[in-house]
Image 1: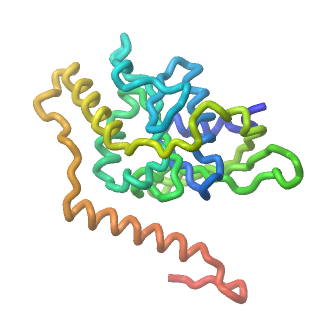
Image 2: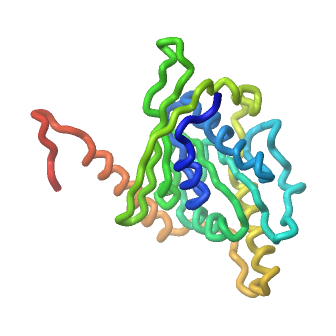
Length: 235
């Protein structure tokens, strides 16, 4: 039966090009990523992912189309385990719209804060009542701008068999390196190859920046916790 009320959310994904799908282990995070990807694949996009999937293309077979775009969806399963550094995100995402790429990160562990502009997570499901319906909330937050909404996914089992749920998946390093290489190729098409994007390296400044992001995440979490007596601490 698919999605209900998902139109605004899909429009937001196409605008921001990057989505972190959070939630508990076994909470259909990766299944949701593939369901989202299906809508793009039906429009002619290719799929690159770090786990086994019958829908996936190999990186060697994905190249620029006649318009000079990759037109590709990238799913990094459990991307929060290895996609922590903000410079990695920025290097990969800086040309997302120009190259027509969509990045989906289904992960229990948070990705770098810069990749959390658009998030989605399951609020609850009706499995206990025998109804295969999952209710999701999405949120976009960029500076002072905020927006949010909800949608429903009926019968998530429709995506079963599309990917191997037992496959631990490769690390995202190979995919990130491929994306940076393709970005440099894209720049050369427009005569911008003299200042290629370098391979991403982590330094102390990056570590401090991401540590600050982690502290900000913790502050957001603490601020949302209600205190006894119905009162919340104000900072």
